[in-house]
Length: 93
Image 1 (cartoon, rainbow, N blue to C red):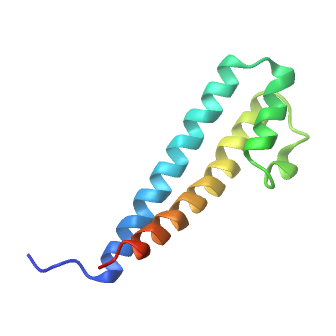
Image 2 (image 1 turned 120 degrees about the horizontal axis):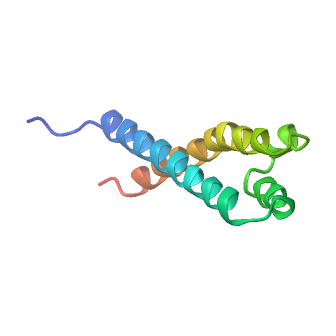
């Protein structure tokens, strides 16, 4: 097998970062939704997903959790994906 090219390593790091970010965010939101009281749940979800939470802050109940999963999940997937690319570039030989 030929060695991986720089572009392949970068794509792999991005993909793994996107997946990890979305998965960890989903786990965090699920934990907050099941273990926190409704009054505190909104505050915690707002803090987790800043600044995107400003767009869905008026939603209540299940809609707030849904918007957090969608918008916050995308936000944290992108953050983790960019961090994955950064770590991959730092560890290149």
